[in-house]
Amino acid sequence: MAKLLLLRHGQILANREGRWHGSTDSPLTLKGRRQAKRTARYIAGAAPRLDAIYTSPLQRCRDTAQAIARLLKMQCIVEEGLREYAIGDWENMPFKQLAEEHHFFETTRNDHDFAPPGGESLKGVAARIVSAIREIHERHEGEKQILLVGHGAAMAVALGALLDENPGEWTNYPLANCSLTELMLSPAPYVNFLNSTYHL
Image 1 (cartoon, rainbow, N blue to C red):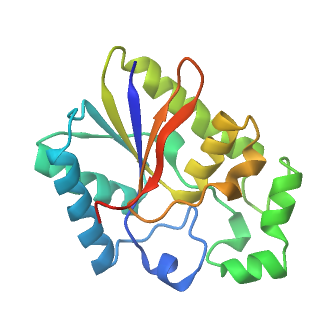
Image 2 (image 1 turned 45 degrees about the horizontal axis):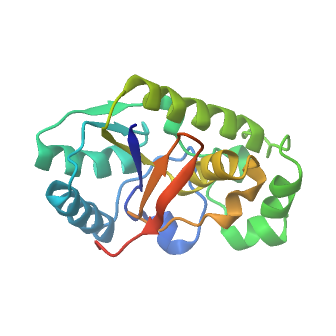
């Protein structure tokens, strides 16, 4: 049974400023690069060793994944399905504005078909990322540990969909930069640990 280790990327400037970067591409900050290196050292010393590393195509995830891959002398596999929840015209907006002016978090929790102008619906994000996670899991049979480097919102949506059978529960799964979550998919989805940052 494969263990899926979910890793949120290291800090970017938008994280520090409290802005939403979904499809917006952006590099790690100095702190984010340090977080990635600490995470890489931790994973390199952990058991069991990784069998594969998958990453979202966005730079912040690829750079976080590459810090680990370099240390372990592995290759990263880019998985489009792991990309972040894109909110179209509302990209780069402060979380406070999204909540107070657009009621984004409340609306998505109650209406999974709602999509911001030019953005994705919660239902669409859930279908995409859960499908990607399940396909990766099926690709790796046996007792293996697979690293998936992704994004806070998209992975939270996946956890809501898998653990609660309700992607609207995504706001109950806040994930810190470079936090680790161990997800098991069988016999039914559950987590061994969630949002662990002690390695940082």
